[in-house]
Length: 128
Image (cartoon, rainbow, N blue to C red; front, side):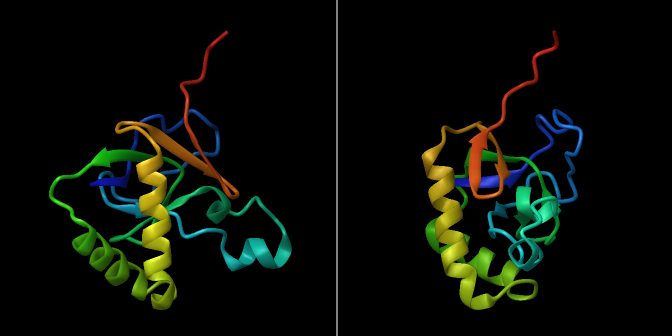
């Protein structure tokens, strides 16, 4: 099953990149945080990051992998358990489904970035 994991690949391609999640852990797109929606200030880290399911920490890059050890049931369970302490437990199913849909949309090995509501493939910077 395709899932998103935290990755250090292509980190540093942008000057404001950060990696606080654990490399290789499942990550999800929880959407914009309340600080962004309340103030319309898109400079918050949550406006452009994925969240680690285990650590609860953010990263600006995620990689699409096909993890044969994870099935839909164990994935949903992991996301629910990981998000219950930090986010609304009622939202876990929706977050898990949306994050799975993101992973399914992209080819395995693609490194993704998030900016506001847009998820896109991250490219290597070209030095000129």
